[in-house]
Length: 238
Image (cartoon, rainbow, N blue to C red; front, side, top):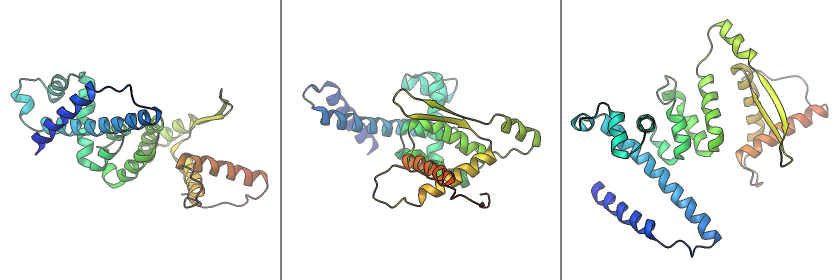
């Protein structure tokens, strides 16, 4: 069955490659780009799975390749670095098959920590985040996850991290205010828990806001409450 589907895939791909696309209107172009991108992501996941299977078989050694990565690089006509990332993703897909439904960019970021000791118990939350996070933000999400599950045991190391904390605001060309920063794990966990708690309070409303917009609104609501004198006392740390 797999052979038949691969044959059909090559037939359809050949037809699309030679198709006249000039008649597509704006709406059809958007839809076509979206669907082709989804197909590419799906095929990328399949290639990574195949690469992982090949690495764990005799296929690469039988070919005379020096390593699984060299074999994949040759067969897929990609660089050795990309081949190693394919193998990394293939392993991640074995551990978390749900990554196949995530964009290739985000899945590749998650793959970097798939063999982390904490991934088996706590990786599901990161995979869920990967399904809704903008690719530009996914690397930061992975770094936050890793920091959370790599507790700093040495007090001196903790102080080094704390010394790196910063927060800055900038005026963007479009009039928006940019916020950039980094917090030590303890501070970051508390700030994040607070903002996410506020954002979840109205998650079932009909505003149509995406998660990131709810997070921004939660930060504004917290600051507004403080400025109006409505924030007093405190809560236990998460």
